[in-house]
Amino acid sequence: MTRLRNATHRLLGRLSGNESLLGAAIAFTVRVTAAILAYAVQVFLARMLDLGDYGIYVTLWTWLIVVSHVATFGFCDSPVRFVPRYTERNQIHWAVGFLKTGYWAVSLGSVLLAAIGAALLWFFGHLLPPDYLIPLFVLAIGLPFLALEFYTAAAARGFGWVLLTTLPGYVLRPALMAAGVYGAWAMGYQPDATMVLAIALAVTAGLVLAQAFIIWWRIRRRYGPVTRGAPAKLWLFASLPLVFLNGMDELYVYSDILILGFLVAPEQVSIYFAALKSMSLAAFIQYAFMLVAARDFSLANAMRDRAELQHRIATATRWTFCLSVPGVAVTLAASYPLLALFGPAFTAGIPVMAVIGLGLIARASSGPAADLLIVMGHHRANMVIAAACLAFNIAASIALVPFYGILGVAFATATAYALRAAMLVVATKRLTGLWALVDLTPVMQWPARARHAAAGG
Image 1 (tube, rainbow, N blue to C red):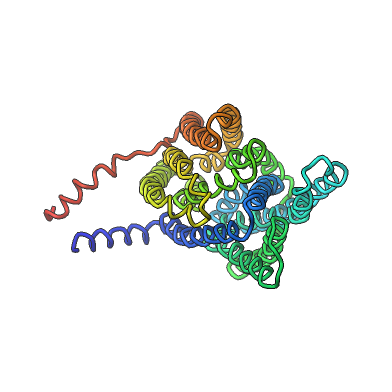
Image 2: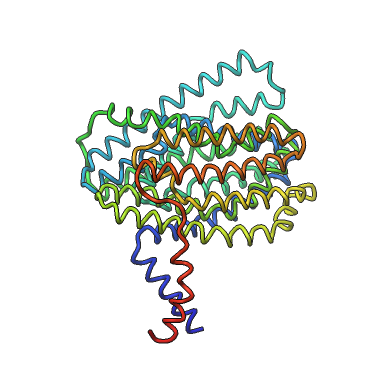
């Protein structure tokens, strides 16, 4: 008990003295809550919808996430590059000018993309399966709201407001969406993919307004009225190249679901998504460090302290990897009851969970290296790596699905995770001189340190 108490005190002391770890701990706690809630919501939706409708919802919502990231026109990533730099240097007028530019760029650009999508559906919708047509029109209407939600979350992340970054999209939206679907069912309406998508986007619209209001209120409360600005061209030219990175990165992240939408029936997509969602309970560890690492790297880079920057990279990567391994193991041990919650047919996804879990461990070995490249201005290298891994995943999935079904996509995706981690480590070292591969030496020394401390040394 004494050793456990001492270890706990050391951990709390380390967290309280390290802003990055404290932020990650807050994000971790919120993400745990959000993951449990989101998982419960997905189980609820899988039970409320038939297997085919659930597959349609999963496929189209995934496509909407990818397109919405593109519709931010690079302003989904650039806040973590510019906002910490301006606040660190007390250039608040530049930070506010950047946020205003991003708001108008995302608003106008996403509306234009939504109009183009609606026009294409109007003229060529007859070429699509009937079950997809009306849901796609709903997505076209809701595209600007989700794009703005991604932008406002990125703005909050740039200021280090972790709760404001995570709570709206990861806690409030699924809770309110589930309440809306249940309310419709209680009134006698049978939920389908169109209804669920419409409710999710309506909730998103309300949350975006609240999130934007809170951000501007916090800025005025902390920094006072800000009247000066800066040329919008500066941030447009800096952010627009990230459009290709955002699109490629999101296509890479969600490529397995998108590929399955073309290769297998919606019922198989449902099983794969349930397995992926179950294993994502372990992936929130990586997400928690991603939320705070980019801002942390940006601050160290702004101070021009390479030693401190390398230390922060090593710390973030080590914590990410060391927490991901037991997270994957525990989640995999509970795979059967987790999938059984969705329904008897979903337990066929247990092998998928095992393969994806190995891929997550491989991905954790490079920590937030992708965010480091963005902060250091090497977004082109990040885009090339994502494109290469996306091409590999598509080719491998097409080759394996005919023989192994959804397990083939899992193998392809896990291998792509490992490939990208290796490429990110090499690119980071070559372009920045910094080392991003996990170093477990301090972890291996913990037992010796513990014995030394116990001996009173």
